[in-house]
Length: 295
Image (cartoon, rainbow, N blue to C red):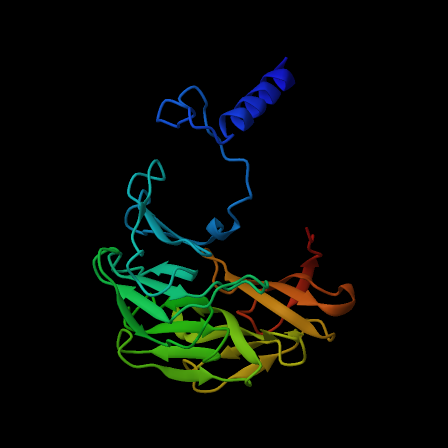
């Protein structure tokens, strides 16, 4: 019966659509039909990043791959777009200052490595919870992998840039000026970064050898690695102990909020050597804990 009803509707629409002098369309023509989305999937709306206000857990910011930044003040019951008037719709990262929750940082340019990712136009900063924004630089970075704000000094911020101005950048004046503190090569950017909340001069970053253009695909290589600094980015050491010796790809990093000596790395590596690695000495040495599932 359901199939017959749908077929009858289609036939009726086809007949209604025939050119005829006596046939006209009004607002009542389709009044009895209920519209529903049948695709394609809205892939550009995929959420890339979530940031929760540390002072009010009901305030949440999300950044979409091609949908800007959205904010809720009621724990997700309703959302409002707050980035539509800015220069980029593609978002890679959103973070909230841990001491000044009205200060919100946004890195534009999706941080995935797909063919359909959109470029961004740098880093934005809001000092009023997202009501207004200022582009504070790195306008040719293309893809921002992560933004980390020092818990002891909100003017000190690290930005992992994956494309264009590739590398790890640092500001000590709230975004007025930037210094590149880690540069690998023109083919390798920085995709992730964490800092020790007890001592923000301890920085661990992951580099990712990647370049994707027409007829060009570099995805992983000897320049993908984990790097560690103990002096706020002045000097770096490439970390290898416990990590795969095979060619590496993208590496994601996380630091335990309970014990900052514990770090985790999601390591992409050749020959099935990738997986979840853990460090219990603040990133100096690593041990594989499990494989990862691809899907």
